[in-house]
Amino acid sequence: MKKRLISSFLALALAAGLLAGCGGSGESSEQGASSGRDTDSVVIAMGPTSEPEAGFDPAYGWGAGEHVHEPLIQSTLTVTNTDLTIGYDLATEYSVSEDGLTWTVKIRDDVSFTDGEPLTAEDVAFTYNTVKEASSVNDFTMLDHAEAADDTMVLFHMSRPFSIWPYTMAIVGIVPEHAYDSETYGANPIGSGRYMLKQWDRGQQVILEANPDYYGEAPKMQQVTILFMEEDAAFLAAQAGEVDVAYTSATYSDQEVNGYSLASYASVDNRGFNLPAVEETTDEEGRTVGNDLTADVLVRRAINIGVDRQEMIDNVLNGYGSPAYSVCDQLPWYNEASQVEYDPQGAADLLDQAGWVMGDDGVREKGGQKAELHLLYSTGDSVRQALTADFADQMEELGISCTTEGVGWDTAYDRALSQPLLWGWGAHTPMELYNIYHTIEGTGSAQYSPYGNAAVDSYMDQALASSDLESSYELWQKAQWDGTTGVTQEGDIPWVWLVNIDHLYWVRDGLTVAEQKIHPHGHGWSLVNNVDQWTWSEDPAGE
Image (tube, rainbow, N blue to C red; front, side):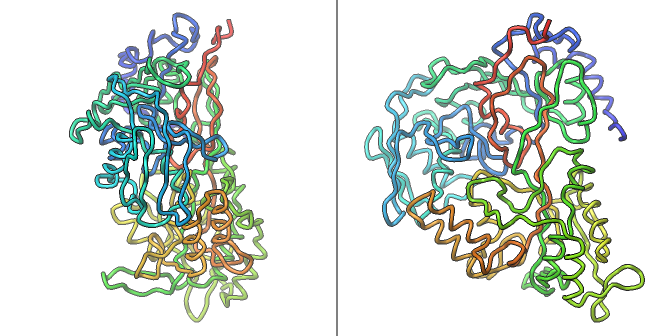
């Protein structure tokens, strides 16, 4: 395996010891973590995209969006447990009306913000009304408005039933009405969570300090330093012993770092291709929509069972991943009917049945048309590029000729309307299914790839309208497959899911990272959801 080149700038920065001020002593890993190291602090290297562009304001993406995580600085009403069921943080109980239009949430009466002011239902209502009006990341159209009934009870008046509201309540950090300014709050957040923002050097690091007045169990880690680094630099920082945890990828998984072990965490961070499910045409905006090859459901089914997912895991991910069959593998609303077995002969039979006959050149033909796919992946993502190349090789064994192209996200969304694009998804909410498969009102087609099924829409609409969260899971499962129709192999299969990527980190010897819930899409803050529970052993170096 070729080693990546590290830029001279990063090498010089590390050689000059610029990280020493962040990591404490700046000593090498050979010296061991026990020499002069604080046992109540930790230094973590995350990717540059983990830095919140708008700061630590829930209205502008902190804790939400594509890379969902607990906001740490602020409290939330609910939390997601390790098994992805719902637990409580500020909330002590909640209920929903029979029509699903009013949620009543009772909150604790012993919580204060870090400026000493009490947190009340007024702050909760203010927060939600603010994110509804200002959120640049999440959709809050299901909320009409929030209202404080008294100091400890908030009412959420919904514009439509939304049974999975508890999952939304788990990511919205509560801000203080008396101290909130949309222009300044992101850089100077006041919250009531486990940590306070001590320092933020944009483009470089964030330092969090434990909240001494936190109402829950006191954090074991009193200081958490997050460094924002490219993957190459993070690896070099681990080699130099300048960080305690460093994110990495399968590219480095065959390496060894003295004083560190490679930790692997399961994820629902999946990769999959959309398969445009309608014939090619041009829409009113002049965009090409649909694909004549993937419009045939037999072709889509052939592609789905013609993929050797384990081979991809072994050869592209170096063994660090799991087969993906849906956008929600292992989550409470996953339907096991999504799973398929690798069956290249069955795939060939389906293509034969669809009339795509193998040509002398190894490419199938039908009515003078070659079986060809142009596969897209995001530029600069080496793993997606490798998965796309592997997928192309496997498709060519079936007689489908493939070309590949790296594209920017500025054009990828439009091009995916007619060409398969390798996407990354995975969230701690069933809404991910809705966003991918539900048709957009007035269009008859889903958002990211042309597809529509009224029965699938109906199940998801019923799931959202359910008055009980747990009972809604069955409806989400039926949207995937109800025995007759759905988005799985025997149904429409408008997407083919390939792998769930394990999230990999170099972890310094002696550091115990608390039990992780399955990670969502995004390699970063999800790891530190429970950083307050991490611990160091008394003799980290084992001396």
